[in-house]
Amino acid sequence: MSKDKAKEFYKQAEQYCHFIKENVVTVDLVPFLIELLMTLYISAMDFPETQLETDNSLLDNSETDSVRLSDQISATYWEVFNPYIDEYPVCSDLIDDLTDIAVDLKKGMKEYESGRYGNAIFEWKLLFNNHWGQHIVDALRALHTLRAQ
Image (tube, rainbow, N blue to C red; front, top):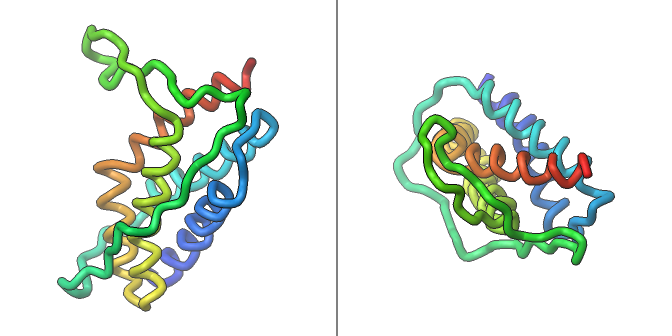
């Protein structure tokens, strides 16, 4: 079960990482990027419970791809972190959102590539719950606004 789920998600993560590495995000590409992000989010919601198979991690944070936006898309947008608390909005960064998603996905991808499928799912799920899942939600709000204009 873990191997099949990991393989399916790995392909989705690879598609996303390839997309942001190879493309300048234009207004025309926003709907496809939204689809990629939603697919990742929905798939991550369905991760099974798993434990680390080994203690030693293969994580290497030295490799990051640069996200490029067209001049038509502003990288900054306004965000409220907790919609249930009356607080002032803060400035957020779409490039940071899209980059952090890729960085976190690659951590699980390295585990998958080494044949450690349970570790891959563990990394993806842990980081989804604690980091990149929130970046997807934030990016989707900003991208949806661009798409709807």
